[in-house]
Amino acid sequence: MFEIRVEADFAAAHFLSDYHGKCERLHGHNYLVHAHARGETLDSGGMLVDFGVLKKALRDVCAALDHSNLNDMAAFDRNPSAERIAAYIFIELKSMLPEVPLYAVDVWETPTSRARYIG
Image 1: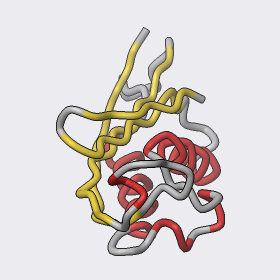
Image 2: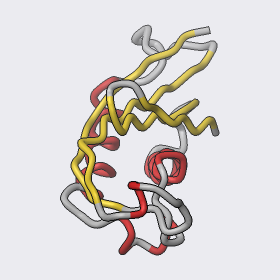
Image 3: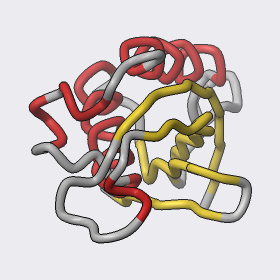
Image 4: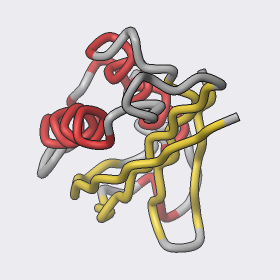
């Protein structure tokens, strides 16, 4: 099994409507995002996926989220948790690159807190 990973980042604000604690107030994160592709076969050039292709798509998805209030996006149902952000990015990447064997997306809110969506 082969696996590759690319990363991108974005900064955004959010709050969690159904959370009781400090995260229910508007705050921001510098998110780090990892996209993983996994598969058993390589192309004729010996690659699972061209890093550049996956990295560009990930950067494009992250750019659409950058410097925004994520609560304003209907996709997050008023609660843009790291889990929902990871799922959103995965779905967007898969729609942009259906031929890529996308496996998972990780969203890091802090260096010690990560959510993963596995497709």
